[in-house]
Image 1 (cartoon, rainbow, N blue to C red):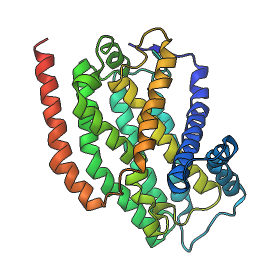
Image 2: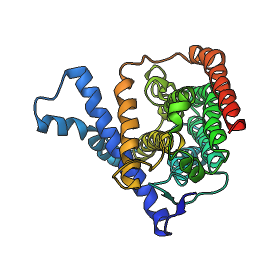
Image 3: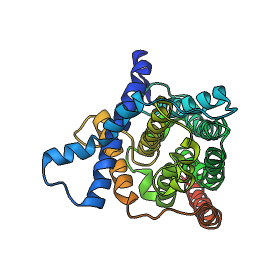
Length: 314
């Protein structure tokens, strides 16, 4: 079981996640620039590429917000604010080493519930402006969620089944000798795919797709757009970080302190996701839905069955 962090950790958590999201966005920008224009010729050029998200953030801070006819401003503002809020609340059960802000008995259920909150947030963001394109983006995320949520839920439930607990700290404790990723590889792989879909990022970026003029963010400008995009990166960081206690042993590791192992493993997962982003094509919604229901769901069910047999015979 994880130890509960001091009360001040709850106040620090949002800023820590925001900083990680900013660093990840900078690394993503550098990787994308390298793929499009070749390797950076100097450290200065590399830093300039990595600073592109910061420059965009500063531009959005001073940009005038957009307005549309008969928009529901309250719904739009609520949807935009709920995206980073859902990410931070999901991050509350993430252990840094062996300590987390909170470690409830149903921590895995809590994480999944915050993911559902993100569904509602993106849909409200698309509905609020009273615009066809933004509404298309909102409904795209709902459709995408229906495709990835079941295999995602089965993947994290498989880890809970292996630990015989829904408490995140207990899942970490059960991996002291053997990481779950080694004997639950299918669940681990499916979780990584669904983590990208959860953050509507990379190949699963259809809710904010260019073909719909930005989708759910089509009518957002200024600080509101910055909050939504920042929330998306924070969701990606939290989803990637949750793979560490679920499948990669949490803070377990030789020589180094637990908190450092957690950060290194999280960085490794994010590095893999950033690296494969350019290699994976954008997946059409109906194709991914078919793939999820005909391949991923049976795969994770088979993995869960195999884990259940092992657990019953311990």
